[in-house]
Image: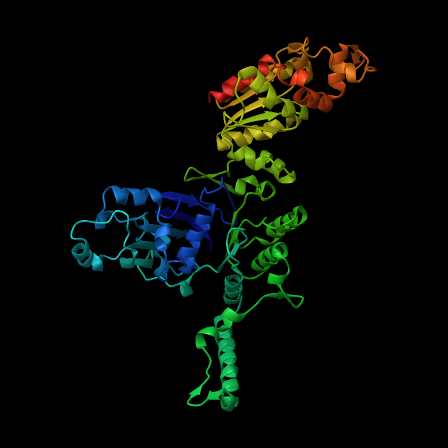
Length: 526
C-alpha cells in the first residue's frame, strides 16, 4: 500500500495544491521555501495527527493569501481553514469499510483515504456573533474556537492507531530541533507487535512499582511519600537506539542521520519521509546513503526532499517531482536514455539546470570562463540581471540536457562547436526548427570549427599580442599554418581564457562572436 496523492488547501505555502506520488521513490526538489517540507508535514499531520491535536499557535499554519482574504472581508464565513486530503492506492489489504467512500473531492467516485480539516467550530457561531456583535477584528483569528477533525473517506472518525501505513519521518534539516526521541518511538511502534509492546510496558511499570513498594520507608517524609509520575514512565518515551553500545545521538550528526535512515529502511516501514538526507554527510556517505536507498527501498514508499544534485540524478530523474510556483511537475516523462545518463554520472549542476528559467549550456571551460564578461562587453547587461544560468555541458552531452529541457520547459541556449563538419551545421539547423524553447548555436562556417577560432576572428586586432607570453609558440595548429596568436589560444585554451577574463588589456574590450550574441539575444527575450 502507498500514498497516491495529497491535496492541500490553506496550509502555509499552499493555497490550493495537489501532488501525485510514485509507488516507490519520490524525490522532491525546488527552490528554498517552495514548500517541500510542508508536503512532508502535511502527510505527518494526516497520518499521525500531529500539530493540531492540542492547543498551540496554529495561526502560523494558515496560508497568507487566505488570511488576507479574511482581512479584506472579516466574518465567520470567511475565516481561514485548512483542508488536507490523503489518498491511498486501491488494494485489497486496505480496510475498505473504514477508508473507502464518497467523502472526498473526487465524489461521486469512490476513493480510499483520510481528510483532515482545521476550521471554525460551528457550535460556537452564536457565541462569536454575540462577542463581536458584527464587528470582527481583521487582525485576530479566533483559533480558540477552531476544531481539528480527521475523517476517513468512508465518513468514519480516524485515529492514528488505525493508520493503514506504518511510517516514519526522518528530519535531517539543520533548521529544526533534534527529533530523535520521536524517531525512536516511531521505530519502536512500527517494529514491535502491539501485544509485545503491551507486555513490555506492563513488565516495565510493574518493576517500577515493585521498586517503590520495596523502598517505601526511604520514600516517606512525615505525612508525605514519594511516588512515581506515571507520565514520565511511558516505556516508548524512554527508549534510545544504540549502535555498538553508543547512542546514535552521540555518533555525530552525519552518522546519526545515516544510521537513522538505514534503520528505517531495514524495519517494516511502508512509508519513509526523509527530509534533506544530505545534511552533515560527506560525499562518500551521501553515495552510501543513495546505494542503501536503491537496494533496500523496494517494498516501501519513500518521499525525499533534497537540495543535492547527486541524490536527484542517482535516484533517477524519472522519480523526481519539481515543486515550483505552488504546482508539482513530475519528471517521469524524461527520456529514458537521458535519465540513465544522468544516473550514471555525478552531475553536480543538474539541479541548477532544472530550477533555472533560462539556461546557457556551453561546451568547454573557455566559454564558461569568458561568457559572463563577453556578454557584459557586448550587450551592456549581465547574465545575472537577465536571470540566466550558465552551465558547462561538456561535448555532445547537450543532447541529454535537451531531452530534460523538453520536460521542465525552461528556455535553453546551447553553444557548441561545428567541428568543421557541414553535416553538423545542417543537423543543428533542422533541430532548431523543431523546438520553440530550445536554440542551438554554432558558427555556420566550417572554417570556424571551434570557439577559440570564432573569438579570435571577431577580435583579431585586440588579441594581436596574446601569444607574447609564450614567444616560442609556432604559427601552426594540427600541422596547418595558423596565426601565431590563434595557435597560442588553441594550444592553451584555459590559460588563454583566464588571461582574457583577467588582464586589463583584454578584459573589457573583447566581444562576443556573432552566433553567440544572436543566441543570447534570443534567450533573454524568452
